[in-house]
Image 1 (cartoon, protein in one colour):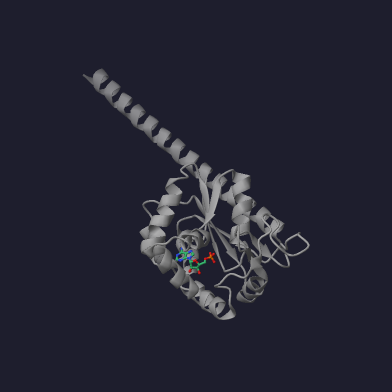
Image 2: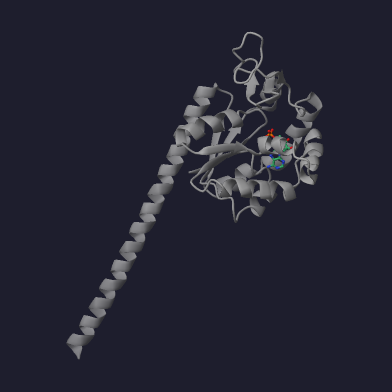
Length: 246
Ligand code: AMP
């Protein structure tokens, strides 16, 4: 099972990807996270990623494509990938190695997205995500529950960069809805509801899509069997008629 998770900023892509990965028993990764790890690499691509992300801009495809290709090739049994592709151009470029069975698209209005981002915190050590309202840390001093690290705001979560990322999202990422709908892969979910409700709806809609695809595959198979039988019957009748007439 291979699922790409897309959507508005702070629509819960990471949270829902983790829930789905547990339900489906496959690995998950976020391209944003892979890039944040890459920033620590003392290399040209690490420095470039840092500069582009600090501007709220997309990281160059020369960096993104090998990163995604490498990650998906390591998980041939299935995956959930959050944040890729982010443009129709990327979707076209990766068609040879990136073949999701479904694309889960989470949507929230811009105002909700901005509000959620203002409450978003990240552990400075282990990178676990928190939301001070919906997923606050349980530790009394407000540090990370997993490692005790300090919770900080992401560098690109400033109001100016959020505006820029939302503008870019509507212009470049949103057309992917139509792209994947045309390919029968789109699963659209209203992500304004609570985490559990969104997860439940996403699971039901994904199951429905997979069942419909399996049914279509079965029908196609029966169609082919029927056609083959018809051809064989026709051939046998023709040959028999020829023998009887001669
Ligand atoms: P995210 O954690 O998904 O909000 O992504 C953080 C940042 O990583 C984005 O603002 C982009 O700069 C970069 N990024 C993530 N995914 C992609 C992608 N598919 N293509 C280009 N840049 C990306």
